[in-house]
Image (tube, rainbow, N blue to C red; front, side, top):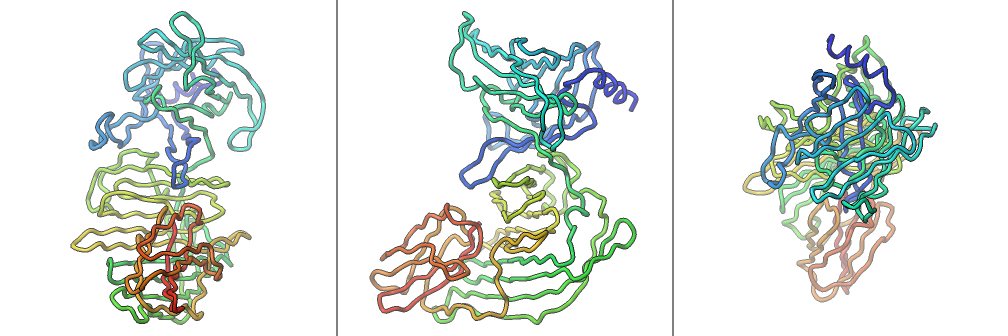
Length: 487
């Protein structure tokens, strides 16, 4: 404790320090993958600090990740994105080390116009860093501070500027808040991702289960014993009352409506049956409201989680959806745990890990949802999604109103995979000749129509996440409908 206090006192004497030993920082990559997710959210929090001569050495927490050059090997003590250590010198210089033990230098006390070698290549080329501005303005959390911007430019051994993918990339440092924009140091210069700081946090149970009177949530829980039986259960919860018991417990009174749909793929006549349960009123209690749901930083290795079938090798990996709001999802690997912070619309994370998998999604103010995959002689899976909600004046998703007349199913059709992400295959084994394939939303609007005489692949990338009906119509007018989930 004395050592940490001394380190923090030394840090406080200088401005523009990149980070300190007691704060948590979260950074989001400015990239998105094909499924629409922004990936590679990083956390920054030193695991320990030591004094070495006049240098302060920060040891970054280890992560669970694949070894360099061997993707099949998972290392539970893999260095973080900032490398294993950072050395901070008395003059404000911060020395980082990449995977090849090359140094990357950040001069936090440099003035506008000052330059230095940021990184040197083995062939004599080098990247020069220049402080190009120091301006006062708003930063990631809405507060105001003076920010230095550092730009990179590559030169050859003859000191002439040359083309390089890192040219023009910038680093931003806040006077009192530290790093605002940075790069993956461990894989530099191969990795070209840029990470921008955002106002993330590790949520508590109180954050997760913070419902308000009048909130409405509809969940869809799907279970399939592929390819024979599929059961979809829609449950709608309406919050009727909220009361606290002490400081650490909350009790909600809610109404619960439920509709169950069972699809039997082995029959061609009326394969879907519906069961509507009467509305009930119950109470649910949540405790330990001030306790964090996740006690580790992103990707930090944590052993012995009973949810993970006694598999001790897992870590938290953040995933954020590409939405116009502040989001934060966390995934636990090979188990998966996620949450979204301040999300204004629906988004179900895509979890791709070998079975068995147990995953839970925790959403700030929306509760928790389960994805669970089981292996065996046949493929079994259970998924639970938030498909509709009304909260804080926002209505989002497509509500399935329990008790309404549902479409009639007849004939025989197979759609796979279901749920689907980017592509859906439609096959009609009872159809003869050409048939028409249509996709409808829950309001009955036709979103796609095409003709086919065989198994057909349909691109779903332009479809929003939600529930749809896929219809096949033959020349004689006979129609076949099945429900499809896009996530």
